[in-house]
Length: 131
Image (cartoon, rainbow, N blue to C red; front, side):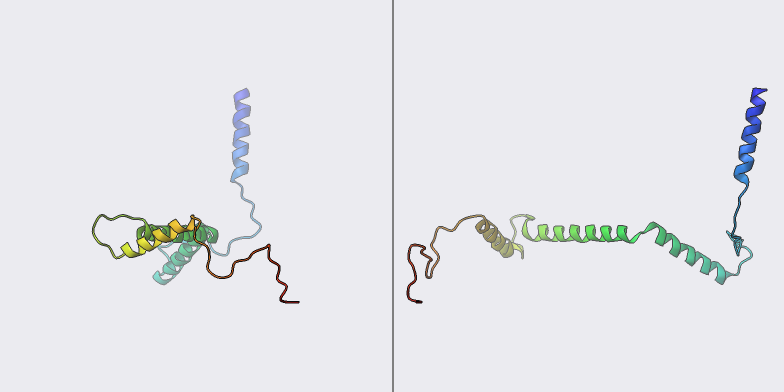
């Protein structure tokens, strides 16, 4: 008896889920029967469906991030290949550029010991010639 009530409740629940209440009736049945359509209209539907799936699965934010990653990666590889990659003892066209870069990067973090040329500022002297 208990099992019968459960079966009836399950059947009633399934019957409820099969009923579709739709206020707005579709103008055309979907999916259309492609065997009854002419070739031109089939192609048009396929093209429209392809465009809509591309719009759905390629949001602009995702495309922007992937493009940014690609440009960053390509730039990094180019800079690494030009300035840091060692290809061996043979002469390469980038050797002079690498030597210049090495000098510039080593002088970037060092303090120069030579005094600058030109008039230096001395805070103990006061300029009285302007009055």
